[in-house]
Length: 554
Image (cartoon, rainbow, N blue to C red; front, side, top):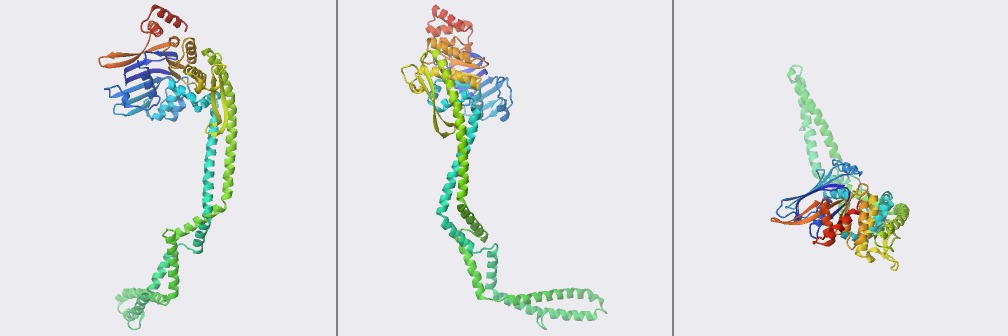
């Protein structure tokens, strides 16, 4: 419930600071006095996008703040989920706009995104303006009314989950069918590519090994020459290093017993002698293994040429990448061969989900059919006292393709008299009749959704007299049970039934035009309603009529 509203520097409002109460309240004022400005400020609190032009001329910042009592409504989960401090007795929503175009939103002094402010605002307040009557044209709105009275939110959520899975399976099936068809068209080409790579018998690391062998064989004469020279230097008779070391060792050993100082040198020379003998043997072995075979070199180079050709063809740089390409082609070919199995499995899943979705949609249809009958009877009961004794209100449910909200099309059919056939309400109802239909619908669903605050902006357009009194009575009843209903009205019959009466006035000051809203006392209220009855020239008869209307609410 809206307890307090504070507005500063918003269009024509310098500062407004006013308390509001539960039950049925009314707001009156001449056309252009600023009632729409107050609604505009409330719209900003409910998450509407801001325009810096709405800031009062000359002001740097605009502030709109509202205090709500949430103690009768289970809203703590919203605050817990969004990590916002929860105070059931005083929930504060604030918007701040600057002349520079910046906008900030707060819930209980916690900065929040505009989307979060709107999410909370939708749970706190419903502002019904005249343009909302156009909702009667919208099938979504009509279906929503039926669902609210059906209390089928749980079943609808389950259906929507199933339907989303069904749509996903449908998409996956279409994509798989397209992929299989495309692959089948390319099967011969894919098979040719796979055979080409598979027949190449590629081995990891083979390219590097072949390149090294080719390099070695192409330089075999140089290698042989270098090995021969080294071998000759080490092991040639008379002049070889090994023979020289052997002679040196023999000479030093002959004097070792008489000249011990050479013992260490003997050990070192002996160690080098052994190493060089090993090196000489290895070089001799290498020399014997190096053999130039032109036919083998051709084979190696031919193999390398084939590898290079394949790498260029498949736009890769290594044998390992060619092997990966071969394996990928193999998988694609297997997928083509096994495509029917996968396709059948996905078709079965899609069919299973479609069957489940249709079953859940049928359950929704049954709930909605029952709800439609309830609404028809309730609307008949509500509309007859509103000056439509021969009214007929019918809800037509027709089958539709599975969609986001089930498999039902809803149409509200209406006739104000017995001679006119039932037709869609938006096509045949007058402005006044639509206002009464919308008020009756809102009254019916307000209890179901348990919305704390409802504001009606001139819902009484096109009605008068006894009908207006009955509409006021409906709004007063809606304001019971801890709820809050506020009606902006031009009709004295409605204004008289409010428990609290506010007036919006426009004043001309030295600094310009300003708009204010204040709560009227008993005497002021009599005069305001008298003025609504007779115009600016308030007569004694009008005052007596106003007092008589006010007595009706007791």
